[in-house]
Length: 99
Image 1 (cartoon, rainbow, N blue to C red):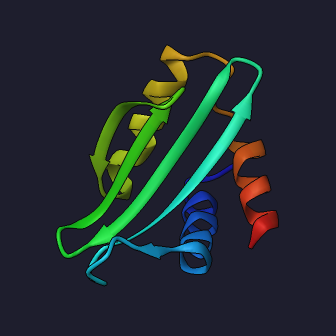
Image 2: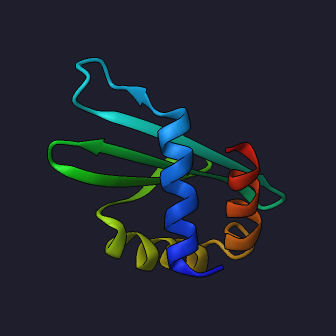
């Protein structure tokens, strides 16, 4: 799946499922993908500082990056460290289904 399509889907998912962090300046949406090799969670947060992605594997934060241009290399690095955990086509097709 292309990066522009991934971004479109995740942004639409965020708009539908975002929750405030309490003060209504920070909003986040979380996607959890359970696979035979583990659990992948991606937290997308938007706040005055910008867009932040927190990536968790089996409930442990493995990385945190700012902005979309840094998300794609980060998720690929997580995928390389945890083979079989991240399948962009499946994950974002499932996410699009939830929109």
